[in-house]
Length: 407
Image 1 (cartoon, rainbow, N blue to C red):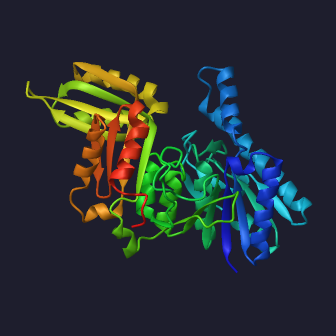
Image 2: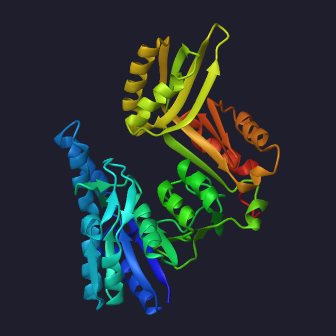
Image 3: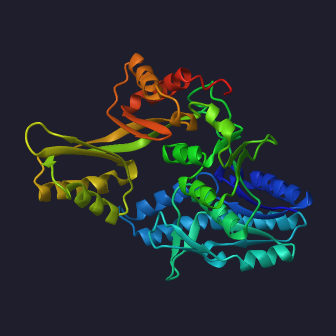
């Protein structure tokens, strides 16, 4: 007997018929002799509707109150699934984040999980009850409802799998696995049978929408395998797991993109110790995550240009802070592009093979695509480009590295 945590995304629970399909899958897992804990997202589109409602009420609604509103989406789907399971003859019980006691910090809208209490869930499993947990939400030390950010139900599921010491965490979505790139952009995209935690971390952080980044962090830290699969087919999906030697045979495993990026540049800031720290401390204090950072020295004196990218949702706040710090530092100007895109290549094989950067840059140059910023790590190369070239860049890189073929 195995203990399996199953998470179902918004499209999987979009209506009552799909919720019944989820219930049948849960029951099948139980009938195979496994214990199962279910995590559900809000019905597709529900979270956006609730967010829109909050901003219709106020142009700057309280972040605490927005979390209270958004948490109702998962409350509905978890209760409905429990009702359906009971109607099918199985004991089930729904739980909200504060009932399971998923303790988080108090950064509303993108809270981080601190601890998870499991005694209620373990008690239910022992009594033959199927727990259905509302994903995406938790509670801080003061009892406030918090939410974990877009895709936060993935993190809920993996965190529960870790806390319960589950054998597997299955993430059900509307795609049947992790692909070499977005199949909606590149028809030659190929489903991967396995991918390492490290590669999946990079892909999730670089724009791949299959898994939330923090869920992969949890899984990698505690070695919980994740099976990404579709709730609409019986096909095997992609296993996210520890690295094995075969994975390094592929020079590049995937191409990701992110159109939700903005670029800010401080021009001619004093080139001396502490300047960068001052800017990024202010951004950190505002809970703004900075992605790429490029600093270039000037030949016109002791000055430097400092450019960085942030998520477009943080752009206005980041620009306001940057202008304030630039004025305090005596910078000449603050330049910005609210809309930029980032395309990235990811692969364990890049560690030991030369010429990867050349091949990537040449593929983009051959298509006339200019690179605005470049960032690299041991297993990835990211380029900031004009967003109108995103799809062209993805297809060019996918073809350049022959990702339509098995390694």
